[in-house]
Amino acid sequence: MPLSSPSLHLLRHHPLPPTSNRPPPHPRLLLPAFARRRAFVCQPLAAAATDDMAATGAAASPPTLLEHMGQAGAAADLTVLVAHIQSACKRIAALVASPGNAELSRAKAAGGGGVAADRDAPKPLDELSNDIILSSLKSSGKVAVLASEENDLPTWISDDGPYVVVTDPLDGSRNIEVSIPTGTIFGIYNRLVELDHLPLEERAQLNSLQSGTRLVAAGYVLYSSATILCISFGAGTHAFTLDWSTGEFILTHPSLQIPPRGQIYSVNDARYFDWPEGLRKYIDTIRQGKGQHPKKYSARYVCSLVADFHRTLIYGGVAMNPRDHLRLVYEANPLSFLAEQAAGRGSDGKNRILSIQPEKLHQRLPLFLGSMEDMLELESYGDVQQKVNPGYEV
Ligand SMILES: O=P(O)(O)OC[C@H]1O[C@](O)(COP(=O)(O)O)[C@@H](O)[C@@H]1O
Figure 1: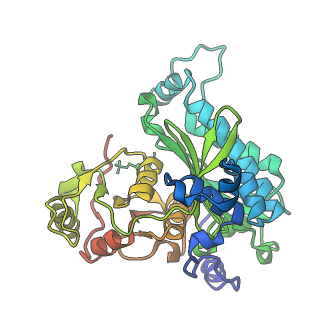
Figure 2 (figure 1 turned 120 degrees about the vertical axis):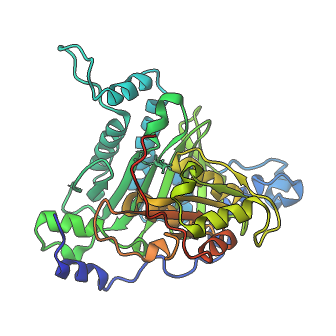
C-alpha cells in the first residue's frame, strides 16, 4: 500500500525521542558488573582476572544471553521476546545444517518442480525460516507486527503486542547448497501506540517504517562453524556463541569494538566496471597501500551479508555492497545499529543509514559498514554508489 504523505509526515515528526541518536557511552561501562568480569575471562592474560577469580582460582562461567539481559535490567517483555527469537534461530541453525537443505535449495532453483503428486512441494529454506520466526513471535505474545523480507506486507500479530519486529529470516540463502554461512537479521522497535487508531494495514506499515534511530534492539545470528548471536540493546554490541551441549547462547564477545581501522575490504569486485569512478579509485588506492593507512589491503567476500559483516565487526575494514540491492528496513538499519554501537559506521556512501527515513518496506540502497576511519576515507571519495544495476545472474 503506498503511503500517503500525511502518514509519512506523521512518521517523520513523531514525538518519541530517538533511542540511538546519542553516541553510545563506552560500552564496557554499560555492562553489568558480572559481565565486565566475563570480559576479562575472554582475554588471554591472567593479569586481567578479577579479584574474586583470583581468590577462588577459578574463572566464573560467562552469562547466557538471558542472564545478561537480566543483569542489564532489560524490560521483562523484551527478554521474553528475545528468548523467542533465540529459540527460533536455534531451529533455523539446525535447519540449515540438516541433510535436507540441499534438496530444498534445488527445489527452489527448479521452481519447486519434480515433486510427486502425493507430496507437498518442499518449502525453500528462507520461507521455512520465515515460518519459524513468525510462529515463534506469535507465541511470544509480545509482538504487534512482523515485517519480513519474505513477505510483501507486514503481518499484524496482536493489537497489544508492545514490539514491532523487522527481519531478514535467512540472508545468504542463495549459497546454502554449498554450505556457505548464512544468517538471520532482526530489528526490534516499540509499537507506536499513537497510531493505534489507524486502519490495520496503514498501522502495520507505519509501525514497520520507523527510522533506525528508534531501534530498541537489533541483532543477527550467524550460522557458520559456530552459531553466533550478536545483539545490541543500545548500550554496546555483544556476541554470544551457541553451546550446542546446553542449547544456551553464551557471552563470548562482550562490548565488541570495531577497530578504528582494518586492512580488509569486502565487495563483489567482479562489478568493478559497473562502479563509479570514486569507488574504483578508492579500491585501487587501498589495494596498493596508497591510502591514509599505508598498508596494502586484502579482499574478503563471502557474499553472505551476515558473514561479511561479522568478520568486519571483529577485524575491521569495510564491508560493502555499492549497488541498490540490500534493504534498508531488514538489513541496513539493524546492521548499522550494531556497527554504531561497536564504534563503527553504517552509511549509504553519503548519509548515515540510521538517519534515512524509510519510505517503502522493501526499499533498497547501497550499503557500506565498517571501521570509522576506513568509512570516512571511503566517503571522502564522494562518488561511491553504483548507479548501474543490471541484475546479475549469480
Ligand atoms: O550479488 P551481490 O551484489 O554480490 O550481493 C550479495 C548480497 O546479496 C545477499 O545475498 C542478499 O541478497 P538476497 O536477499 O537477494 O539473497 C547478501 O547476503 C549478499 O551480501
